[in-house]
Image 1 (cartoon, rainbow, N blue to C red):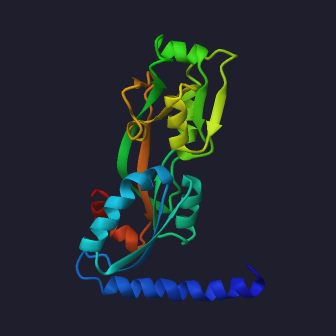
Image 2 (image 1 turned 45 degrees about the vertical axis):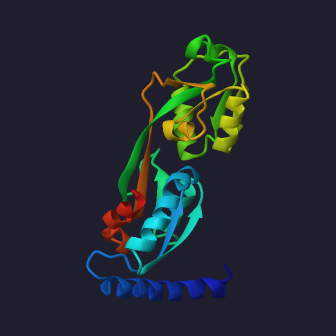
Length: 230
């Protein structure tokens, strides 16, 4: 921003916060009312957003929502700076004290491979097959990276980093390697040709709804979770 732009933002933010307070005062009971900006990590948007849109239209008629998707770290920063009112992210590193969090899902990870590669089990995959690794700088990716340190792999076996879960699962179907992902993300692309193995080292992804502590939406967080659970 230019100096003038920064000055305008400094004056505008208190006005917008007052508007949010006035809208909150006019809420009927526990109803959500006003404009809200919500962020979703992409893997959560696939599962939560369709049901949320249908439920909010019926159960929160006085609220309007804007949405964006992004990485957990980016969405967390936007909630902290007021650019988003809430976000669904993966809690991999712990959260700043200024954020409130509500757990939406705790999802175990599983290994997935085509049956054509999985004949010798997980140890055979580790020894012979390429590993398809979801981006290590994401919430899921950080958990995967730490978990894989517990497994010995052949120096000849490659790790291929990809930024799209659908691409990873298509590569698994094509027998190009194996992967480690939260079980709901594997099940969406599961076919009879795919074999899954529970991770011997316990690992799960924690999906959380984060809001700025004591914000209007933080106080209405339970209502928001009801909409997300549809």
